[in-house]
Amino acid sequence: MTSASQPLPPAQDERERLTRIQIDRSCRQTVVWYYSSAVFWLLVGSALALLASIKMHSPGFLAGWEWLTFGRVRPAHLAAMIYGWGSMAGVGTLLWLQARLTRNRLPFPTLFPATAIIWNLTVAFGVVAILAGYSTSIEWIEIPPSTAILFGFCIAVIIAASIRMFRSRESRHTYVSQWYLFGAIFWFPLLYVSAQIFLHTPAAAGAVKAAANWWFAHNVLGLWFTPIGLATVYYLIPKVIGRPVHSYHLSLLGFWTLAIFYNWAGTHHLIGGPLPAWLITVGIVGSVMMFIPVVTVAVNHHLTMVGHFHHLRHSPTLRFVVYGAMCYTAVSFQGSLQSLRSVNEISHFTHYTIAHAHLGVYAFFTMVMFGAIYYVAPRLLNAEWHSAGWIRVHFWTTAVGMALYWLGLTWAGWEQGRMMNDPRIPFLDIVRFTVPWLWSRSAAGVLMTIGHISFAWLFWNMLRRRGAWLPGPTLLFWKRSPESLPEGAAE
Amino acid sequence: MAAFYLALWGLAAVLGATAIAALVWSIRRGEFDNLREAALSIFDEDEPPGAITDAFPARHPRSSRRP
Image (cartoon, rainbow over all chains, first blue to last red; front, top):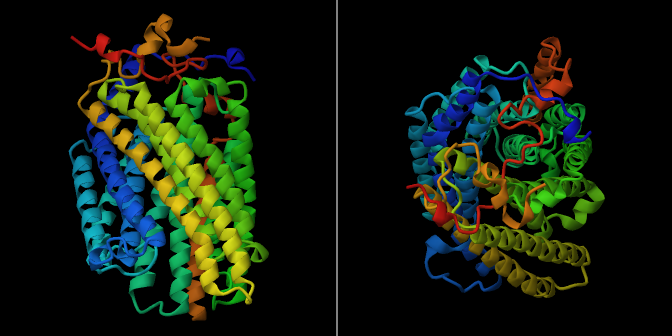
């Protein structure tokens, strides 16, 4: 299918075209609030990440103050990144996408920025509470449970807006991205509420708490970040290269199989733990079944991109989004394999898992969100990004940094796991073996942080509108005058 | 303990059930009838298939700043 042979969709009248410009305008305040906050938390999270990483190979570093001990810095990093950066960038993108997909204005123009402020205060309280020693010690949900009501309020507003936009949608079709977004919007609150109930009431104690913990934690990735990330990929790749998704059949198959299988996968985190074998086997089956959605998504995105890879040179959005989509395939394959008992007995409790987690949340989700912000922010603020050079710095530092991070820790973790399974090797020898790779992790972290700082600089200048003025919010600078295309981007 | 596992898996089943209910709803609504048109629904006259909508900013953006 070439784009040239595509028939144009039915012509739309002037009113609808104007509406699309107004759609982006209606998102301005809300989405800019969410994105700016996300960028702020990205910087906070990076600083905490570097601290934690350095402590792994130089344990004496800033160890004199209990607020900055590893046991506090590491969960604070997670909270800042997951609830600050990831969720706020995700919500901003989700709201903009829904407004675009339903061809509606984003409702609640004053309430939404208020929710962003509440969300920020909640994350700030959570991070400070963790650093002060009030963590719940339950991974991915360390923020004290008293904040649940505030997150709950923000999510309730998002749900109300989503339903309202969907009910008054103009498009006859529910695009595949909308399905993914609904998945995120409706499943995450259910997960969050039930996890709070399961984890913070006497209902669960001891080993069963771990089962509830990992069911929740894995689903935050699988049913919150993954659907938002994939919805973005399914919208942005076709929009940027101007070509509909290769097979819409496959895209629907991918969504519905994800919806049915993903939520069972969480207990693979507890292989070898003190839980009934059947419970863990269910998790393994769910994980292996994930091959179906992953293969369909991977094949589909690849075939959509075939013949259009040269656009990667010219489009910052496409670079980040395609990098993210490829890493989604990689991380999911790795995850399915890792859930097999024979693989897991080596990889579990090693640095391998850390590399895997970052391949999912960073290389996939975060990179897709960077791509989304590069696409959305100019359309909201009517200004172009002020510097192509800084975008390139951002891309290459994060892409290379992430690759270095993953390669070092995957290798170190695998060897570490093999050595730990051999009782003749003294434990300290294994620790010493990992130290050079922990240094490589810190080096990768420095690279990624440089990328984040350049991104924050770009975003700051976007807020100040230091880039070229865009007369029409959805028409980019070069598109209006093709002769000024950078580096031969003209077809 | 067993009751707790059942509760947890019951909840997972509820999540799965919402997915299946949505699938049935979408089939009934005819979402699967015209997939080609659905795939094209993100395009419009302004940005039709074939229009590339993203690029690096031009090298000297400040020269074209708004007045």
